[in-house]
Length: 498
Image 1 (spheres, one colour):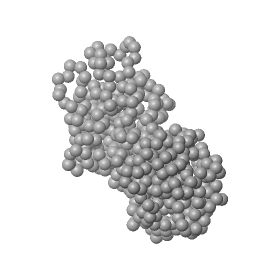
Image 2 (spheres, helix red, strand yellow):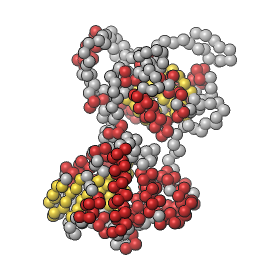
Image 3 (tube, one colour):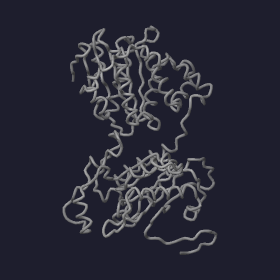
Image 4 (cartoon, helix red, strand yellow):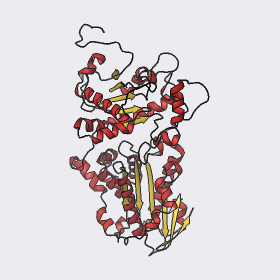
């Protein structure tokens, strides 16, 4: 223990690092930070691991949370905290459960939020009380923390949970591990001999329902070295840093906007994109009889299209059939089924379904109308996306909606906005009734868009899936190049294709 002149608090020398230990604060005292502008990154070690040693490189004394991460520009307004807890795996008489340890972590985080002066003795800087928590930990009960936060009525617990914008789990056995191997390691305390696979890929992923494929990252290292980096050029560290930047950037985004808060220019811009009352368009379509059309939900091509990640070239499903085969009724049924699918899995906050049904108005039978309809629906669902349109609207005015190139560029950028979206489903009915020249333009640009996505394999991009119905015209199939196809023969008899 020591006293330093000018400090009201005492400073202790600690080698165990139990509880919260601040490693870095990037919030400068001279900066007037707004509420929620501070991002706190909290590192939590695995069971029986040392809070500091877990993150320390194998060679030298570098510990990346303290020595590497603060040097990244994206962390300039971030705080980096360490959390340690007592849990030896061998000769431990404690009866504490994972949930009890998670409870203590929540209490520590609440204390940091409610008493910012707790950290000032370490930071030597003024800090803001409100901060986001891009939490990450390894081999710790992440579900226990979430369950504890949601199960209790405490507003402080709920506030902690709502503040979490990201979670990086390093080899966490979410669905269990080989306990026989674990007991062998604990009893002998040896780290020599043949390698043992305690945690399989399946058990280290799938931490949440319908976990996105692009959020499952393969790292070329073992379970011990997965968070030990000797230098900033380490390829694994670069991968982790990229994901942390994404969390920090996401937490820096402005609060969700509302249509009622739009400026006059934004309201005029949105009105220019308006094509029809989409709810009425959908409700005007005849609803299928109860119990019918269930076959399509089990169709192999539909399931491949719905469940597979876009990396599997599953972006497009084409349903073709002659007139009178019920394509529009089927499109409405699948639209509603997709919405139910997203809602049941809790994905409907950042996954959205847009639709365009055959319109009898000849003025709305062009690809331009379809694009404007999608943009209008998207902004109604996610008002923040108006930011992708306004620069073009302010420079072009009402002429914006007459430029296919500009609208297409806006659509591509808006649907790729990962801060607001994780996925977009497009349902297009009666594509064959779209004016031919504009339809060809739409299909050619769509092909280039999907080819670019496939070639770049950008894991951070929003995925886009399209379900289109039309008559079985060869020229449409040629331009569409669907990954999956369902050909309607009769109302309840379908033919698989591809």
